Length: 166
Image 1: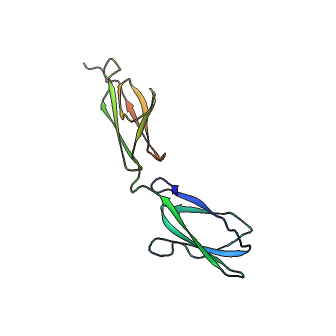
Image 2: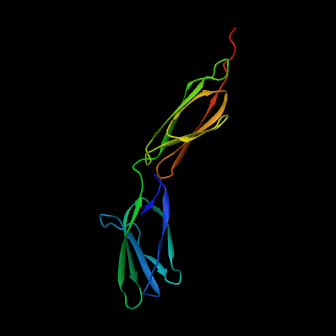
Image 3: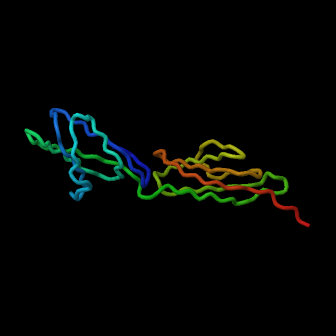
């Protein structure tokens, strides 16, 4: 089982044994619809890497194009979440004249869930399940979120010292 982030593609290998020579391979989705046409290959390149395959469940059908003209198939599962990992980071309080009261709240959605948040930039806070960063001074910060399968999203914010009032 191969895992990808939403919208990403991956690769897999076709490793032919018990046959030497030319063949074609084709991918079909769960409804039996061809995702690719028949693609010519040869065991001279074995294993063969197939690139740019998106999330889904596939049946890979290999057909020998030389004697004995046999066919074989295998199932392939490329897991992908239902929606992209998204991050909403907001400065919920700006720094004050004392330059130490800034707060950033980060909320992630989508992806594989089980989010961990990190703050980098003018201050650093290691990954944890807490998406609230407080007592921040003025500066530029990047909030990173990582989900359960390693997909990452980031957002950058700047906290400013308020202008003096007259």
